[in-house]
Image (cartoon, rainbow, N blue to C red; front, side, top):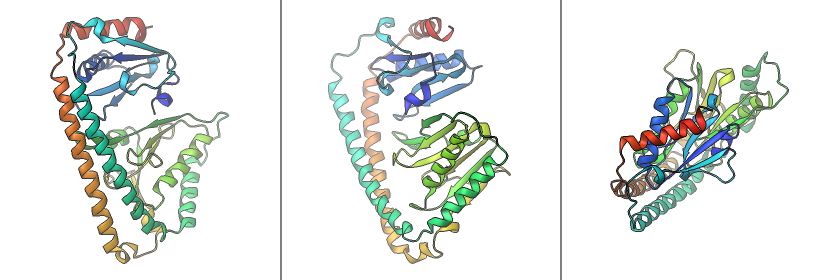
Length: 329
């Protein structure tokens, strides 16, 4: 998802080094130096101790770690941090790296099985859905949001993102932080398969066609599913507010949209209560086991990181170089 977020930048500075600790320290120093700018901070899916990058959009620059790069990024500048440090890289990290890969592969196997079971849960509700009512709900919402807004000559940009995922720290998300950045949030309630993602896709496309820039946040569990749409120029966001990122409005202007109540046959939960509970429990067990494997991978990553140490002066020198060569230009 990185390219959509950096395509308009002049410089994308890529930090190369085996240590997440060092790369994070440099990114934090860049953030500290540009605290008066509007920053977009990329958190790490490894764990909360690390960062993956920072975008300083008004400087048309980004600093990111090598692990998240994609080929042919415009304005890419690679910086080998070994040139600035005196620490020797341990010769053999292969065993720990192999363990990390093994545990991550096991985690993804659990998540894949969980997704298959989740599809069974969706099938229960899809069979009880009134899709015409769901379509009418989307059309009404779009008319409300775009009422009186003149259409712009150019389609809006889409920035593809995630607001959370499963990490070594467990399930994490940044929903409260993101929703506080706009004055109006719509909390979508429903069940698996009740069309929450389809509803948001329609909202996003209508706003984009109208000429507004869109932040489109995907589900880290299912890459075909959208969890949030944010339109800063219209000062609102709409998101899937169900487990594992369930929230309720705390501000007067925020609203709940319950697709289950509007478009699902009454009594569906009760009718299929036994099947729903069994399927949900089965799905949750796979998710929990997946997170346990990620935590084990995190332990081996920490074993690697403990072999690195860096001087404050080295981190300062790296940051000086980045600032002088790119960001201040």
